[in-house]
Image (tube, each protein chain N blue to C red):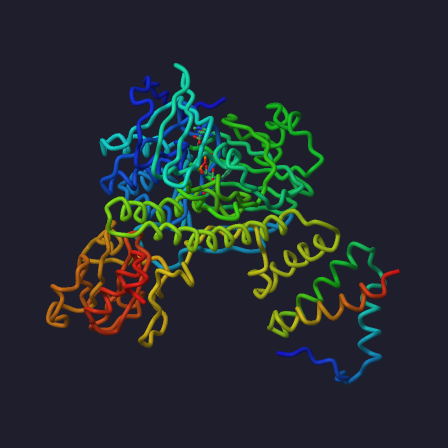
Length: 527
Length: 68
Ligand SMILES: Cc1cc2nc3c(=O)[nH]c(=O)nc-3n(C[C@H](O)[C@H](O)[C@H](O)COP(=O)(O)OP(=O)(O)OC[C@H]3O[C@@H](n4cnc5c(N)ncnc54)[C@H](O)[C@@H]3O)c2cc1C
């Protein structure tokens, strides 16, 4: 069926280093594994990636990439490509039966390099990640290398790898398990992956058509063309539209995939005269679950192997990209000898609450979309009816709470505010973009520690002693001043993953050094 | 805001009559939705989710205790 994209086939190469020991091996060359590999490589580290397949993500999976993910891909050099190829959207509309009840705009505030969302098929992102990994000269992606055994010893992990030429063993200091929702690594360590299954089935139909739907997210509850169920419509690149039909638990997944049946459903929705081609069809059930911890000795879990969510809210891939963003600089700092190994524990401290937030949000959305009983359905429909007439009910409508960046509340790496701040970007929150010098603030941060200094050089006499790279924010950069609630002389310390570590209303070299040491996990120094 | 449970209604009989009469011409499904609408409107009027949660807990403790 697939006509708009041809999956690349990557060559298998026989292994020449059986028995070798590597600093970092990534299991799984999916979206998350490739992201963390590229991030580590751009920080100067060699990475081996093992993937059991020889291509990118097959079929229709992630399409909605959130602002924060785009910023991460921006830092890794893929942001402009994603913007150019993808479909930018900020507006979502919700319909109940035959009428619109609610509309939201996720980015009403201009002056950001990236929009709230770009819709783009996951295989494009993965293909570009593979190419970018190649450009670094530091990532060794080994296609058709399946991990079939793991011995997670305290000072080194041994893995058994199966290739077309047979099996061999590799040793590794840090094993990054990015092998997806059915993670072999997770199962072979005997780690429980618990949560809930939603008793519902969804049909994903991607169709190619020349249509005049605006670039918006449209969600219907109980529409005339699909009574009793919900429908979600998204536009993607290449004139492909994703249509998501709620089928109910009793639907027969095989029968529902029959192209004639899918075509009839789509025709019912679009009308009899609208020409379209089926591009992809699949039927899903959704789950929300996670590992109890993401670090197990020298093995770390990222992405779907660590946590799984229902797609309403687009929190799977977007959550996984933030896992990679969070881990890569920490591991690089440890490998470079700048941070103690205990810094890795902050990955759990920061990403488990983020996963819980994603699970909570996507569970609530799924419970709204699939009411569990008659009472739940009565409340759901009451909200939708009220929303049409009363503004108060609109925030209760939940067709998916779309992915938001995690704020690392209570992280041990944060330095709490000592000064008085009203608003702005608190410690733990991701840095906010703003126009700066004809470009963008986030671009200037790149991927080292940086200090945002608000004002000019005469306001900061000891600036040379500070350490991190300086990014000046002149007082006439009004958006940046406003978004950071800054006045002349303010200082914000930004981590290598572009989250705020600490902020002060006055420059103080000792405070900056202490805060930076805290970020690097030298807690005894920082205490 | 702590849930107030002391008598406060200006016309208790009228309240009861209003709630019951509103359902007279409705089937079970519509009735459920009507109650849900009323709860949501009043919840917004109260404006404090914690107060509503206290009411839910109190109501459940009564209904669940009486269940045969
Ligand atoms: C219908 C649908 C819609 C979605 N929509 C969105 C969305 O809009 N936005 C969003 O952010 N997310 C979305 N997601 C979720 C997103 O697709 C996943 O969260 C994302 O793919 C997770 O990436 P990953 O790299 O962790 O895992 P995967 O993409 O599953 O990659 C795992 C990789 O590991 C390899 N592998 C597995 N086992 C082994 C082994 N033993 N040895 C070697 N390699 C192995 C696999 O071949 C694969 O390449 C959606 C998912 C679905 C199903």
